[in-house]
Amino acid sequence: MSKREKKDKLTREEYRDAVLGALIIFLLLIACILVYYITGYIFRYVKVSTDLFILYNQSLAAVIFTLIVIYGVRFLFEKKVKR
Image 1 (tube, rainbow, N blue to C red):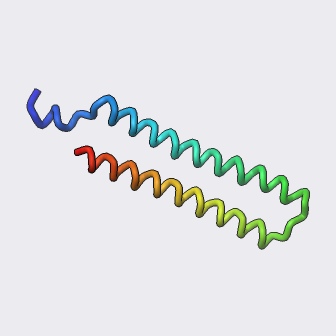
Image 2: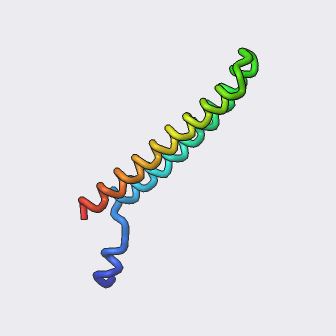
């Protein structure tokens, strides 16, 4: 193997971190969908105004997106610092 091939290969820790990051993002998206449907059922029976429901869903989506961005930036920054 040449030096370049060795350098391009992922170490076991890098591979584990990448899989863990993808799993966390996937679980966050599933949690977002579950909360969306659960609150939809709750709001349907409680008879909350539609504007409040839309505002709630937008804020929930913003929080989930922010978490994904923060985690992604932190993950990339840690990788650059290690190298």
